[in-house]
Image 1 (tube, each protein chain N blue to C red):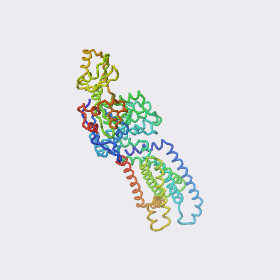
Image 2 (tube, rainbow over the protein chains, first blue to last red):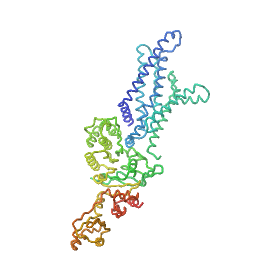
Image 3 (cartoon, rainbow over the protein chains, first blue to last red):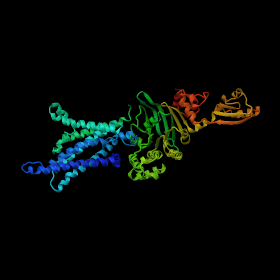
Image 4 (cartoon, chains in turn green, purple):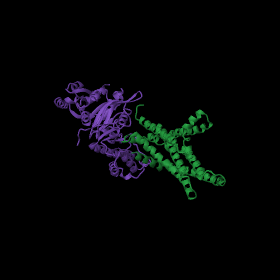
Length: 250
Length: 345
């Protein structure tokens, strides 16, 4: 059932130009950044020869590329997730799901899975670029994998927030703006934490990007993974409850 | 064909929106093979009732069972027996008819190898075979409505609930859909809500009128037709007798003189005075040349019930002499008691 809903979600996404436009533009921007980082590596490479423990090609190219991709995903997720529930509510197609033998949990998980698959496609296309360097050099596959996983977790958290915001409203644009607001806030928390001090440390711990940075350095900590899993499940449970509340007494 | 399984059972259903009672203490049952017409003015609670029946809204009080499964306690079992067409058909404009029905079939847990058979069957029943590859968004309103109906019957549920299914259809399509509904009534239970009164008379076995959240009439179409036909007589005489003479005939409740020759008699159907009038006319040379049992239309009953509660009976076009609304349901013995309660309030 979850897969049926996810497949419908993906199909609708790819039937509109939106998915293609997003894939194309994101790919274009990320390729541009990729080329900048490759260029940077080429200019820096001679000076690295003097050091014994110089950073490798993966650290110079992959880490900043995935960092940038995180920001770009933050910007496009609201557009992808805004329609998930709110548009169905607006077009009154939710009745189809509500009167079918499907639970609220299945509806939400189906929709979430649809977006996850789309995010996965974006990240896969992104990962192809550093992988293409394999033809000329060796890559630190461990670091690449950890960055890949980190970005998948980050994108999944963005999507969970987007889904919840979409479940809250009946207007896609409002869902998009509020998702954007929340994501931006979580990003800013990270920037605010750089000033140091006790309270900032606590705030920065909440920041969604702070748990992403270690993975770009190849530090794969279970507490970061748990942070993301908790984050995702919290917003999924909230979405299920919100959808359920549509039927209940107001 | 018909047996007595109760497929839909509704007990003391109420739903409040804040201080507004959308529906209050509604109870009814629908048996297999029965088509129930649900009538009511706008905002009477028809759609709310249907949304509760289909699990789209939770009731404030009361319970709903579909084929024995409680819609709140066992939603999956109950909903797999249920097909629902809401007021606005729940269609995805970007999908083709086939893709959409495929999705609906899978949502309703039809086995993978049965899906294409179910889709073909539903498309054929709703006349969609020619448009199977077209985008739903590009179809006319009537075809979109048919897609909505196809969606509701694709898994051959035992209960089909249609909220105004013939809205936006042309007369030919309306006839097709009506015969489809009758056909569905053979093996399924159907609840049909509508504004169109002749539709109820031509398709339903039983009528329920809901007004301001309460059931005010439950009557089988047979009883209703019998009653519709026998309450008034239209008489014309060449040498008209006085009103007194007519009033004195047993079984005549009220006489209204329409013009010099024409009278409208309100009669008691259980003590039909038609024979006596004819005999007296012959005996006393009144020169009777017209005798028409006047059928009240369902529309009149509907107006009478729904408007009298709002105290605007005069605007309904009915004469104020017509019997009070209690009369409507009181002659049928099988009608449940709550309608009387509804009437008196």
